[in-house]
Amino acid sequence: MVTMRSYKIAEFGGSVSETIQEIPEPTGTEVLVKVTHAGVCHSDLHIADGYYDLGSGARMTLGDRGIKLPHTMGHEVLGTVVKAGPDAGEVPIGAARLLHPWIGCMECSECQRGRENHCAKPQSLGVFRDGGYAEYTIVPHPKFLVDVEGIDPAVATPYACSGVTVFSALKKALPVGDDEWLVIMGCGGLGLGAVSISKALNVKNVVACDINDAKLEAAMAGGASRTVNLSAGDALDQLRDLTGGGPRAVVDTVGAEATSSVGIASLVKGGRYVIVGLFGGELRVPLPSIPLRAVSILGSYTGNLAELKELIQLVKDGKVKSIPVATRPLAEVDQTLNDLRDGKIVGRVVLTN
Ligand SMILES: [Zn+2]
Ligand SMILES: [Zn+2]
Image (spheres, helix red, strand yellow):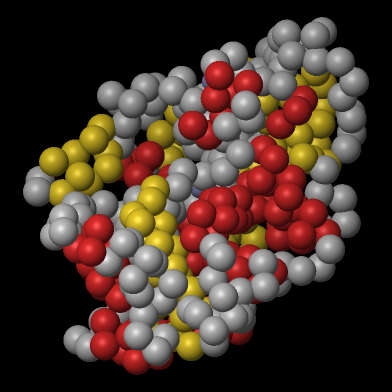
């Protein structure tokens, strides 16, 4: 048996531990990839915990959503193409490729239209199928291999989740005129990515919000015009003042009661609020205020393959400033998840193998 190391969760709420297993064999259209880089994302904490907080004490469990244990997480994955199944066609063996993780059933109408991130039977890498916290992983089809030649692989890796997630959210939030403002809630991996990608999309005025001053500084370095520390009691007034009456759009990369209540209240009439963060809780908004203020409240989940390719082209064109990326050995995955939970990581940690 030819074996590999993988890092698995055996039970929800438990830690990630090293496992020795057989290297999977690609069948059909599958492609085997030797993982060289795997980004550690905040949503891994929700997967490891095994639930989302729905507010008022309610939970949505991930076991009910179809996540089977033991499970190898890791959905921001870059690696070397090793081998393919007999039906995969031409595959660039030996080439480095970023893996598009937001994979669907490949058969339903949403998948056929290229919106696999909206598939009702998701097969996302590192979420519903084993991912990149391992020496090798499998993608079901070569179309999910994205060419990132010329980009530092550690920098390219987080574009597969944090990058494409905020890119897709920004597409829903824009346009924001040169005399208007965009607010980014949260300055973790997603939020910092949203700041830099919004600049690549020519948004002039960006306010970054967080409760951590080090993260706010990183947002300024990434191109934010102003910042607001949400722990201030007058954060809503500050946002309205800074933006001359309120932002045209907000991208909420936290998705907590504290961010959404301030963010939605701050919008100008006709403004758009896009929620991508999964922190949890519930939203209470007076219904008449939605039509009277003509605000839109939208959800955005990851992004599709076309959006990832569009984003990678922007990066290749030199338009996207990288968020801070640090590398650590793959074996430090559990410690890295703990550091992320404790809010100790600015930007992204990418594990290398
Ligand atoms: Zn992610
Ligand atoms: Zn589908």
